[in-house]
Length: 226
Image 1 (tube, rainbow, N blue to C red):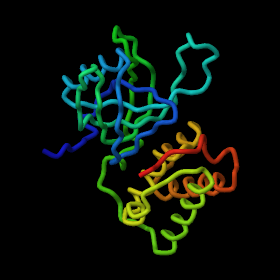
Image 2: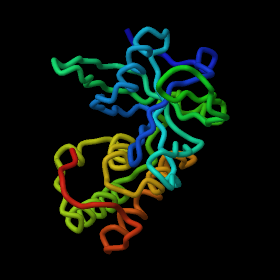
Image 3: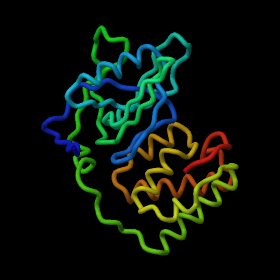
Image 4: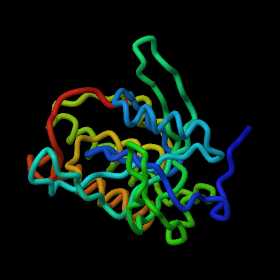
């Protein structure tokens, strides 16, 4: 059965999974390997909820000790739990499908071992609507793929180029935003882009800086993106 998200049914309080350098975007899929007890408990609770939604949000890099609970960025993205598998060692291998971004109002006090945020959704209403028509032309596609190749070469990354070339505009841009090793603040800027066109422009700028060796254009090199 297809899950249809309506702002009328959106939860006002979300359990959140703070993870630096990891963002989720609407209509994208994010696999997660869950092993910490507090997040195992969170997924147990989410499985019993009517909406099965979790907020992915990045912590800010402002903690001055390991004991300090980091502040969180104000904007995250909610994902619905669409795949769940429990391994023999007790870990959960799950996947979230991006539904809509949200803005955090405040953190809720609770007895749960995980963090919960009171959120609002209205400013991101287009996230839950059908994918808008692509504005990309052949020249745009060639220029973006050229930047991707230059970035991957400079960073020592590998990619499935047949998949990249066959992907539609939103799928390609979303995958690159989520998977490229950009800094957390750069990932946040991509997440908060007003629309798909602005996100594509911001992505292109980061790829160009990263290909040129600019420290602002990404984190550690190595690995494979597909």
